[in-house]
Image (cartoon, rainbow over all chains, first blue to last red; front, side, top):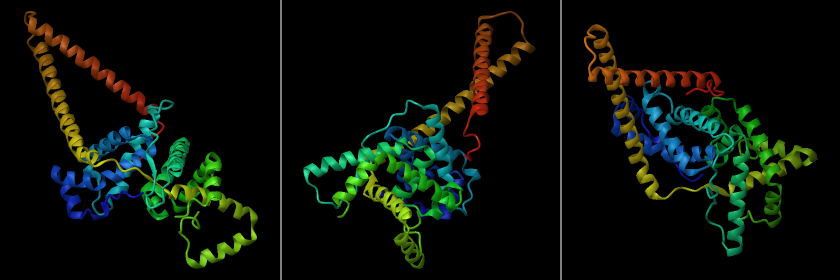
Length: 197
Length: 134
């Protein structure tokens, strides 16, 4: 995941000022965390428009609940629980009629590009996205946090409030499931050696 | 998993690689999972264009503002209804057009309130995710 949010840069003083009710500082907090919030939300719910709305609602809910936030602790794990809850509630209400965008994933830049390979890469990105969206929300979330947010096991464990052992277990089953859905794509990629820069 | 995700120390990696060399089942499993990791590692989530982020805060602020405005409107309406009911009970007098309108408005408000509360209670009782910390 290349988008960064810089939430680590939000100082305690800033968070305290937000907690005290400053809307100006709230804007600063939102701008620091919005890219990451959106990226996580789009990973869980599958489409850009809903991800934007849900991440905004989560910020509004966080603003209302700011009195319960402990400024001694990092912002994003606390906020993430609000965001996750919104996304899961949304999925529950939309069960069976969820809209999934197809062009959310792209290949990272820096690879030589021929027109044929460009089409193949687009298809590969779409196939991966589709497969991720077919995972259970819990498995989808762990893949997003690890593979696209590039969080360490410890960070994921802290964010989700689970043990590192559970992180590994969920990742194992999520990847196993992805391999089952994408065996041909993964094996073709391996045979072509196309993953090498 | 820790091997694939670079979460092992150098010593752990060496020991695990020695194990992989002698265990076909683990090697096969690592190959499969490694291919998935390689595929996901090639991708990133598309970052929306600049105007998306420019409007993000503006739209959020508007929503926050409107939500606050609605809360004030509802609170004001609730106070008017309560006042009308109180006046109706304590000083009923003759039936006037204004009183009839107030009673209709109050009835609508009370029905709406009951409906919302009932829906919330029902949703809470059937919510599979209610134990998730907000």
